[in-house]
Length: 461
Image (cartoon, rainbow, N blue to C red):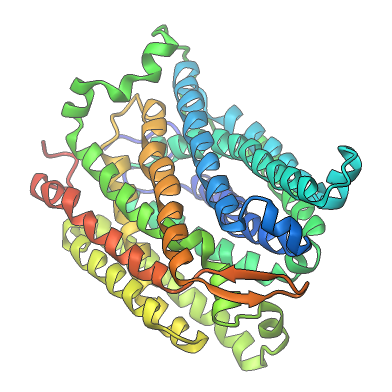
């Protein structure tokens, strides 16, 4: 196998490639984690919990607002990735979209620190509490879409295409194993500083925004472009819809089967993920501030050791998958994920939840590694950017529209009613959402059966 132009010899990735892959992957996951977890809790805790019972009763329901925000954000992500992914292919450039995109992504994220009902009332000269709440919720949703535009430009369209460019079928599972770890590390970091978020959302978003922008500035000096730098003559609009052509779908059947599997998997995750922190806090009594204040020295010493061991295991699994093949692990991973979801649904306290969630997370990590690597493996060379928008339909749009709706429906059926700190009666999602996610996850076998028959080796037709 020839060395690629960025310096990855044969199946090895150089130190510079690993540095950029990790730093941009990590900061991207931090930003997405904050959006997926803390924008929901920001809306729930900061915007709604500060409102009166009258405003809550006569404005849009909080669960519906979260569901709408997730759906619109997903639609924005897909449209953006189609436009920018195709454009990056046409211009033969990735770096400019990654670096500049991260800078702007950070600026928009920091802007969330200035959104509040008080500022809404002042800026729009409003006094009616129902209108103030409604307008503030609308602003959060609109700004989330603006942030998503920046994030999808830099991360979903350009960075993801860059990763596919610099890897090959012999090292992609290893690269994906590292990329799979980054969301977990990002979540741990975000949870570690969550006290700032819950006590001061403004400071939290501003600090995060500055950090993401700094990452973009670093990229100006550290990134080498994976594009060929040659502007393509093909019509932009024609290329925009390339992935929808019947002959293209037929020629790349394994790519679309892989995307269908990712779609079902991601939909199952989105059934519970937007509501998970609300559920943990109000359903299982999870108190992050109390947890952080009661950490003992043995736990502080042991936790990093356990985390390093888990990371090493995941990377080892990635290397093993590259060596042995995805078909040896895929079915076991699906079963592990489904069983984990069911066990998690039966957990009626925090201790049981922590134990039961382990097989679910293990199956989740393995499926992420294999399915994402398969998508990259089966993406045609030279047209990587063109397929990023198609990928986003399966990975983001459908899952983030359908998943939260299913979660919203089942959460309404099994919600837990409680009185918040402001004396307002509200509801939290229930554990039945994990059973619903397991039911969706079972459908993964539909695209996996023909995919397994066709084989995961991209070198074999």
